[in-house]
Image 1: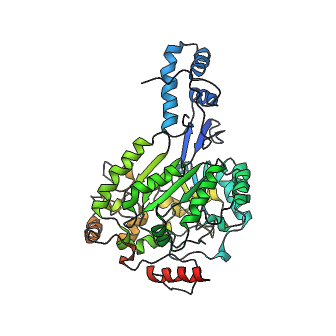
Image 2 (image 1 turned 180 degrees about the vertical axis):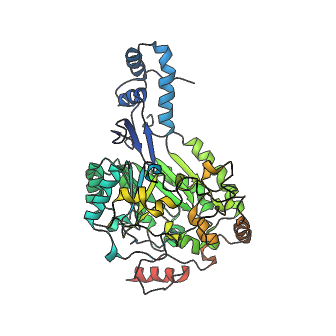
Image 3 (image 1 turned 30 degrees about the vertical axis):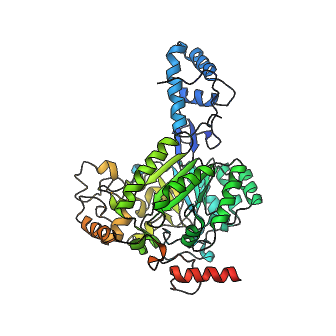
Length: 94
Length: 389
């Protein structure tokens, strides 16, 4: 899969709301007619989708957190962002 | 039995049946609730809180027209406090800048506006009232406020030919989600189904238009297209299974496993005025009657698709065969499939114009005398009368 440009700054759409699920205690993204249950990596990525942090920085932060190389983790981050985009949960790039 | 009750995800709060529109495809019951019987604000607040405690994550405020209730903002605020994601499912009639601002401040998460068509005269003819112009203004106002917008259009014979233009309208309005669902034939829609069901040629033309739009708009606008199950070989996995994910509470407080479960005359629905939502969800006869796949009749019981569609739709089984506990007649393996097929074949020569027949337009409870039926023709007259007033 093609990686997004490294200076792209993903931003969660205003239609998405992140909160803690009362039943499981885990983070979820709520959006019209949908729910996304987040695993720790997903939560870390979603939390960084503020429109301020670049793709490269997200990759570096996650690489540092999970102690693996940026090269290894960047396709996974790209894949996850793509899934968010397909659900229309990221603001479209201007 | 209660160990079998899964976690519900979504509550449809039908807070009133009152509606300024008269859409002949409405899936509300023919016997609409009158205002006097509606739940109070306190009742609804309790329902919302109980829903959240039960695990519900989404609430759709619907009806009728939910804006008809002046306490809507208060209910939205309660939903927000309870951690529910709230969506207002509306015609937009009754929405002004102040009300929108209030709803936003109360924590409303998104708004869904119905459009009857992209084109004013047809849209107003379907709605039975002049509404299209006001809807356009409301949609623009919603977008300007930064509130996420969904557009939904119920498709039928008279508007499915304008699918492409309807998609363009949703794009132009800046919608983030577009629902293009063919009419579901329950309630008023069932009464009008001979005039509403699209022809096979219309469906075959619509499907590629919807798929192309879905692809083209990926990441910009979510596009959902639902074809009528009358043309399908397999039934829909209705409600993702009975009593699995969804709860509907109607204006008078009855709790239903699906919004159209009133079609099943043999079921009795418990009321939030008497029982807790949790008890009704877990223990009530109505929710347990068709829960899971154990109860399934033949040919479903031994069918390889039984975990895919759970035997289809109970309401449709009841409406077409008189028995809610048989295989959905939309299924190719149903012994009743021929009833639907004959109906479908008889509908192939219908005209696509709305004047072609005598549509029965939805009416609020108690309006214009009991049992009076508004047809396309006298709805027009009512409209003219109103314009003259």
